[in-house]
Image 1 (cartoon, one colour):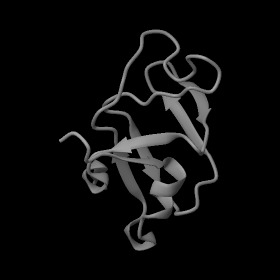
Image 2 (image 1 turned 30 degrees about the vertical axis):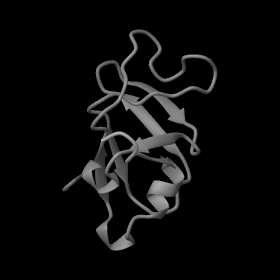
Image 3 (image 1 turned 135 degrees about the horizontal axis):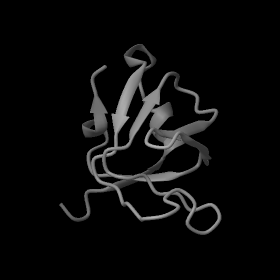
Image 4 (image 1 turned 90 degrees about the vertical axis):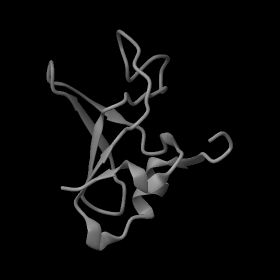
Length: 95
């Protein structure tokens, strides 16, 4: 479906949610995986891999804390990180 994608920051996506549907788990349906330092390739570049989960607990994005459960590494994503969404609501999983 070329041309039907929407680019939206995490902050915009979170702000577009209905507060009554929270908490909500989001799963990345199509992402990129690079071996090595996945989340910091050249300074502030960030990549979410297919299958990564995000838990949204409120509609105001203050920070994005991440944890690699295989080795317990923790890091922060920039709140203005952009996502490309082909179908924004298709990324939600029920909790």
